[in-house]
Image 1 (cartoon, rainbow, N blue to C red):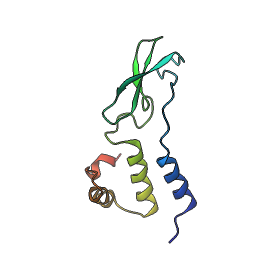
Image 2 (tube, rainbow, N blue to C red; image 1 turned 120 degrees about the vertical axis):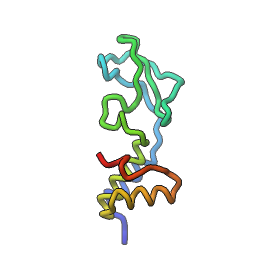
Image 3 (tube, one colour; image 1 turned 90 degrees about the vertical axis):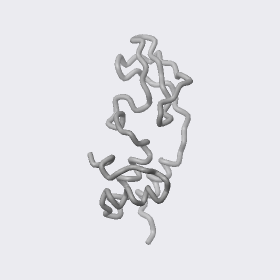
Amino acid sequence: MAPSQTSVILLQVLNVKEKPKPMNCPYCTASTTRKRAKKTELGYATFFCSACRRTFNERTGTPFNYLEAPTDIVFLVVLWRLRYKLSLRDVAEIFLERGFVFTHETFRD
């Protein structure tokens, strides 16, 4: 069975690792941000806004901000769940075989 064009494009997007560029502050929308050397626990770049003096990361202001899993893992869970009609327990078991430990409840919402 050949993968669909959408699956191939999504996997290509996930495999591209671009260096994060300074971004606008999600709190005050200022463009005077600096990238910090410190990263989050999941490895995301952090930034500092000199206008409002707040720190934020790449996922701040997105629906993925409070997730305990990396964004690329979330995309794969959604892709496999929808493409292959798997239950969340099945997807969690597949990831367990690949070395990623989480329960089905991690991605329930």
